[in-house]
Length: 426
Image 1: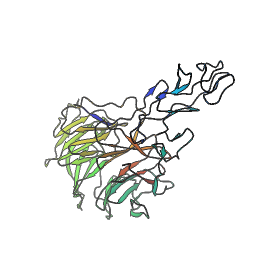
Image 2: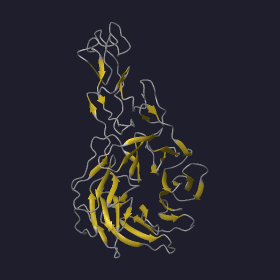
Image 3: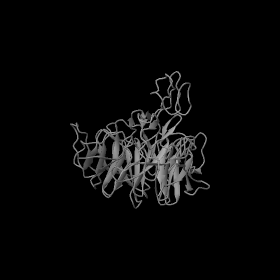
Image 4: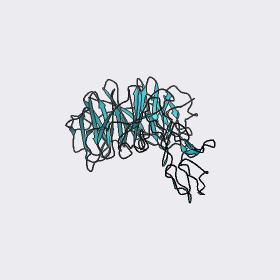
């Protein structure tokens, strides 16, 4: 079985140069960045362009501090001309290093041109500043977003509120207040459902009483396509309940014998999820008997029934997973991965060794993945295997807590609890 990494961000170092693999349209790729800052020249020498004592601004000796100029980081001396040249040659030689000025936000189009903290550099130009759909909120907690049509919904864990706003911006509408640490949220049409982690309930917009109550710990929710059924993970079990139920009675679908299910995704009679503790990714059959079991590999008390293991020992983002066209999509900390739900082995798992980015939010919309990383960028990629992830937006502080998209824009919640939007490049 082959698990294919869809987005595999990595920083590649070569001879002191951090290589930036530019895209054809100039958009900043997920790999990239500039070399380290110059740490200084030897006695009597000078960085290129500054003309140290006894040295030359364009070369001389090899930069040993004996009177010649020292090449800046990311450059080498051409033995034929004595000139310092960048490696790769497509980068531009600046006084403090070599930079990809087509994509580097600190050297965008020119050595001294710097984009604002929330702008992306692409095609040697700084992007527009993201639009603030909802301004930052003092004393807020983690925001989690959901989108339905032209409306954004979000939960605010600290303030205990659920709100909505038009994707174009404007005044926010209160959906619910005085909630107990609202977090995970799902929306069908104009009806929102969310998990209150404080009292372990699931609420439905417009109702004063919980749809689900008295649970061990709700780790994930999702809705059927028609919006008539809500699925939720509670402890080690997967359950369902009618969205019109008034008695709180749910139906057992199946259970894990050791892992704790989180983010849920449903398609037809399959429900997939990543698990805490063992890091497995499983897909369970939804049957009338409700006796599906996903057993651990070394279990002596449980046997797999109606369960397929897609991957093992993952470090997933627990708020989102997707089932699309018989394929499951999830994140393994630094990569988005895909697997066919009929896979018969979970032995060959794509690893994420040597990568520098950690995914902090993830969603899929219109056949494209969107995710936020701890470098402060929001990335997108088509779901085609091996696609390059391109940066579309940036936050002033790394760690966006949630990201969603429609056909034209990506929306993301920042660490200071603003909700911003940015057009998706065509």
